[in-house]
Image (cartoon, rainbow, N blue to C red; front, side):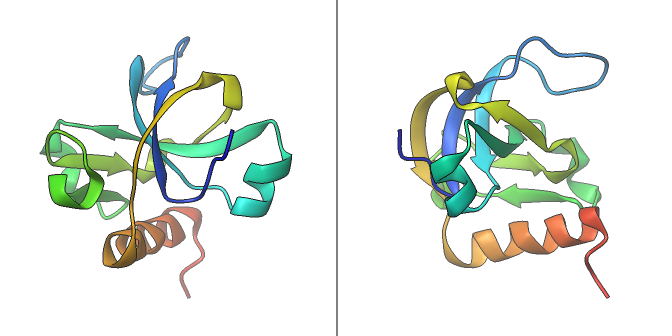
Length: 115
C-alpha cells in the first residue's frame, strides 16, 4: 500500500473516546514518506464538512477543488491521530502546493514549532 504525505484517504476512525472525530471520514496523511513506507502506522488529520470551527488558526479550510472532496471541508489539525494502515480504506486524492503550505503552517502553530 503506497501511502504518501498529502494523500487524502477514507479512514475508519472508530472506536473513539470523548470529543475525538468519529466514523469513516476523509483524512489527510501528515506523516513523512519515509515513515509511511516503513511503519505499520500513519499520522492523519481528519476532515469535517462542518465549517463552523474555521475561526481557529489550527484548522484549515480547503476548497473542494483543492481536495477533490465533494464539498469544501475543514481540516482539523488539532485532532491528529496515529492509525494502523489497516484503517485506511480507500485513497481519494492528494493535496498539493499552497493548500499543503497552509496545512503545514497550521501544524507548526498547533505543535508549537513557530518561533
